[in-house]
Length: 425
Image 1: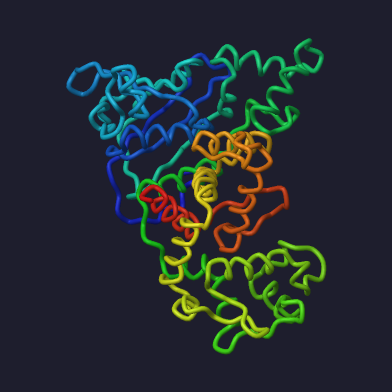
Image 2: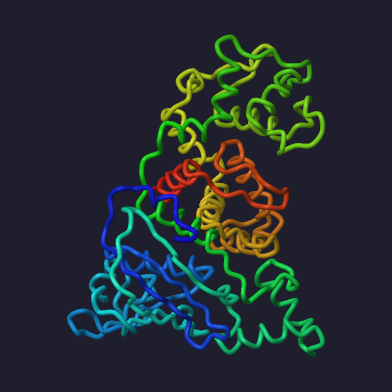
């Protein structure tokens, strides 16, 4: 199957649905053929459909159907939205209750996303299937998903028409709206674009979130490697610092080479004050109380002596350190950033600033004069969190400086642990 998931090597299989999902009234028609386990819950199915069609999970969703017992159902998520309109909450409902894989053909089940724009997704059961345990898969599809908040199928059709015609009277206005809404230049818009391998990578990441497995020893070692490397250099007697309190040039060069970070910083990268990746790691290890300065040397703290050889003990220590920063506002922003990284949905720079500032203001944070948090203050916190996480090896090396790297399996598992700890805090 084209674009197969990395989970396909698993020997254990589970019963699955083979579903053809179409967005009603779209032209060109937007569709995906998906394999999902019979035991998938409705909230999980919602996230699969969000990933499959490129939605951003901003709105309420609902399922309308006649279930396998012949009962009409109206299921709404998230649960608090269901309470507001006296509908059945989505949590706890399993797809197997609603669909019979043996009854092929168009199903009574419909998924509506964004009750304002009313994006209706129809389902056709192609038959039963088998999936490796803990996997999701898209077999085929066509055309990119609609632009969020574009006014429903007919509004999106108009967006396509206007962007395709540079001479249209509204072309400039719609192009500006598209850039504002998506963070991408309108000249790059292609309604026919569909990248099956990229979608299956997203689904694979989603499957790992739904059905997480413990990190392997290799994954643990890869994630903590930058931290463990510097701790090992400081063991047992510490590292002699320069007169100005920086790591010596030879150590900086060694770090960039042995950690494979040459791609992250241009130039000679032999002075810590001018080599940001190494500087950030060293400063962060001090902030995490793993290293401290003593008599011109960088030495292990008590916590550093307990964790310097790496492994799960260091992994857990770092997860706790990320979850419990000194400032509560940083913890709030950490939750936002971790969600974006796990979803692969970091918004455009303008939207990012507004979202973080708004979330902090709603959470009760204020500037010293009592005013709402301005976008620039939110951005500073965002950058602090991203730089903190970049001290760990969570992603694949970047291909381009402008490209956000994908999470490794270990990186995803680490962030899932952080997210779980944040939820429990």
